[in-house]
Length: 525
Image (cartoon, rainbow, N blue to C red; front, side):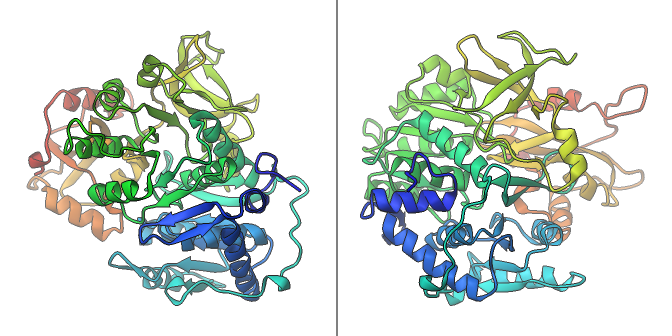
């Protein structure tokens, strides 16, 4: 029998935790619904039986777009029990992103929450499916409840012969292309990521975690695996509202909160409401990643909230690379993304292709059990790994003599806003179709609240008025672009700076120019 430390698949981890601590609470939601480790296993088994009756089995492709709820986690674990091929989609995505995933994955089943937070997900999925050629998937609307069946009808669970090479998950990420790429993960890659996080934050059964970000994000299973591995519950937040979340955290005695840089800023604002009194008395640490962290932010959190901020580094392709730890010094927490987690090998490669010495900058390349198996596109996979089999992150960094990793920039033309990757090219391609746009460059600019904000620098088309902020937003909305990808800043200029050879737009000059200028949302045009 596997233990939480030795389980080779996610389902075996669920079973091992149910045996090790059956009565311990695993999940808590905002309405105070609690589910124990044994109940989590049993609910997943009943749901798996119901899904099996619908025809779901090993390798059945299933797309699910669900908010962060107990239902979502039970559905995901039920699919893991059946050995299905899961394709989680963020619930903030709309027709454009959902359409790409469904057309590429070709699921047999699409699972949605019905109407949630003003959006009819079932209707949205139906609209996408109506545009498909050939076989169309069935839609399961969880507004009617999870499917349920008799677990005794399930075949015995059989783990893959090699969990490290059996793809069970497809996550889509924009990366540097105009459309998302499908990232191929196994249970083993996700387990390695979650266990790496567990080793860094060093929490135990007396702790209480929190998940205020989408469970459908790669960080979702990463965090859940950490909790199941270490044996402590997680409080689920469906839609993050700072005051409401803080009330919930206090109600359940949460000891670890987090998210991205934007979350850190919101927590500081909440702490400012109760000066001299810790806004969450049980809090031990703040953990997160997904966006650049200004060094001064770590000092502010330590001074004002009184806990360390343990920032980490991961991506859809490699869910956990390095992670700050409460064991780190204040200087390490402020100036690095922590040490590489167990099993993750980091190589820094110079522009010339040589391995950089300690302390020298270069591209961050990776090997280890948490690295994905590549993409659904063979050409993208070949480009992602170098001749020695190291994964190219496209990020620039320094591996310090103390073993900690500090990121210094990105080779990829991607903007990280509130922990989410935004492809500049995707936004540029859509904006270019507006009649008032002669050319456009979309860049990321440093932003204290967002990590980076999205700025569109538009070269006005001949004979037209300046594009307004309202016109830009309406145009991108009409094109189906996710709201969070729409630029916060619009600047209209006579001509974009270009080089003298291929007339390529010099984005670094735009970043230099606009990063120096003060900006507030009031500057929207």
